[in-house]
Image (cartoon, rainbow, N blue to C red; front, side, top):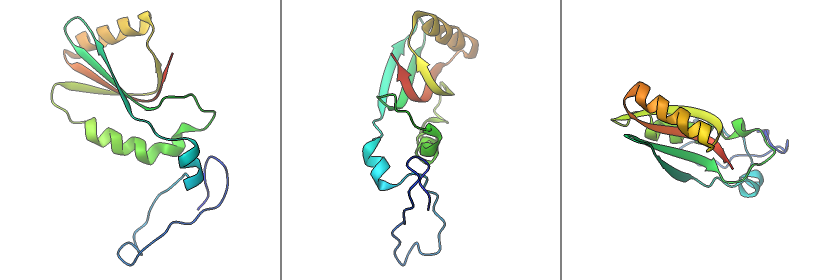
Length: 123
């Protein structure tokens, strides 16, 4: 396979049980170690509702974050059907005063708590 970040070729180890299953891997082991996924949950308390922001990275790397789409989709499957929550997806989000006001308006619009899944929280 071809790594989307460094461009090197890599091979997936297989055993007898998954020999004929197709696997989609876009990142080699070296890049997984160089750009580690560090899940963080940030709670933002709004007036009547709550907003949970789940970010995958804590550092702004100069890479194409779509290379980690397999991991991103696994995280999304976990949180997408939670009762009482509306799920939103962003590439990155900043926790400025204007954006917190927008989150407040979104929670009022949906009349629900918010879950935001993102690659990065900008500071």
